[in-house]
Every structure is written in C-alpha cells, then in structure tokens.
Length: 331
Image (tube, rainbow, N blue to C red; front, side):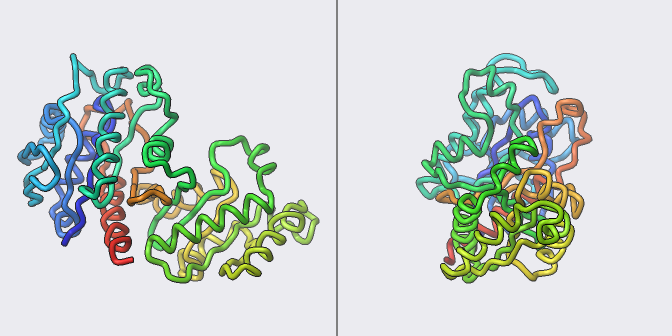
C-alpha cells in the first residue's frame, strides 16, 4: 500500500500553503504516496485561489478518512487561525499555528497513523514571538519524539550528506573537528542508513583542508583527528573511507562510490548539494521513529501570496518521504 505521508502546511503567512497545493496538483505524486495536509482549510482555499488551481478540498477528521485521489486535497483541518493573517508578514498567531501542525503530525506518526512527515517552511521569528521555545523544525522533532541522536541528512539525486557541525562559525566548526566527535557521528550515520534500508553502508569522511592537508602542509587536522577517527571506525567494522578531499568526495558519492558523505561543516555540504540541484535538495531528519523530510528553503515572505513560488522542493520532499517510509517498513 502507498505510504500515508502527513504534509504540514507551514507558516500560513508564507509560501507554505501555496507550494503544498501546487505539489499536490501533480498527479504522479498520488501513485507514490497518500498525501494528507495537516493545516487549516481556509488558508488552503486562499492558496488555491492565488495559484488558480481547480482542486477540491476534502476535510477529514482522521488520516484514514482521506480519499487520496488526484484532483482532491485531503486536509486535517485544525481550524487554528484566529484573526486575519496577511501573507508576507511575521505574525505570532501564524507561528503558533505552524507549530501546532507539526505537533499534530508528530502525534499521529508516533501512533502509526502516518508513515512519514514532509514539512513546509516555518518562520523562526514568528515561532519566537508566539512564545514557543524551539529554534526550528529539527529541534521540535527531536524533543517531541524523544530522539536526542537525530541527524540532518541532505539528499539530492544519488548524493546523501550528513553534517559533523552545522550552525557554527567556520572558526568554531574547525575546532569541533575531533576524532571523538567524528567517531560518534559516523556511528550515528551508519545506524541511520541501516534504518533507511542500506544493509552495509559505505561512508566517506570529507577532508577539512585543501587536498586533504597534503600531509600537514596545509593544516594538520587530517593527521591529528580525521585519520585516527577513520582508523578507529574501521577497526570496529565500519565501512569508512577518508579523509577524501572535499573537491571530489561529493562527486564520487553521487556516482555511487559511497552511500553517504560526512561533511565537516555547514557550507561544505550545502554548497555541494545545492550546486548539484538547488531546487531538488531535500532535508531528511534521521534517527526518529519515522521518516521526516523538508523543503530546503525558507518561508520566502517577499513572494508569499503572489503565486510565483516553486513547489519543486516540496514535491521532492514528499517523494523522498514516501520512498524512505517504504524502505523503513520493509526493514
């Protein structure tokens, strides 16, 4: 049976509702998944008007009440919009509503009523103004599912990228490149890949310095930290290679030489993925009890409500969620 994927609508003032309805206008998605929007029906009707799509809304009270047929958008309507919310403006009511969509999706996935979740973007400022103490989506999923070892993985084409560090300055990120941290993170990456259906995953660790440091000529982090970490991992039975220079490792992984790459800092992996295909890069949260994917862009308040936002990343997020939900079931 097609996996049932919950799609959170995102911030009602953002491009979220628009890209959700645009994505669900694609008939081919319905051959892959049963998509259920978790959001607010009136906002979706506004999005349909903006995009001039002739789709009908079907409001359901529980996931198994959906029709899941092309031409109809099934929505679990939380009815949580109070007052007028204008597109493109930070609004605490919109922030609270977007959090409630995520919370509801998590609750449903934890009891097995959803096979996975794909999220449209939320606005951190609106979340903060609503008095909700989360930095972003990933933190919500980690806390509400009690999954402290959750990791972010980017997927685009055949390339999968994990991150040793993310939202740190480059100076701080370099200081975090330690053997202990690499060993722990690769262990979590390997566990995540097995959960996603890779029986014997092969992981590449990117180098930090140009040409892998050239034996200490361009920095010694490879000698001091990365090579010892790889040796420890190999001696424990992990299929790990590295450090491999960052100007080639992502290309090699996309060609199929590795199942995933451990990027050492934020931009190292982000640039590789987004240069390969900016719109089709999908963020996957691993280490949860279920699969969660997300668009890899923000709320785009500058174009919200104008009907011009691209839904490609939303489409890809739904497809990837469906594909991994199937693999996790089979595993």
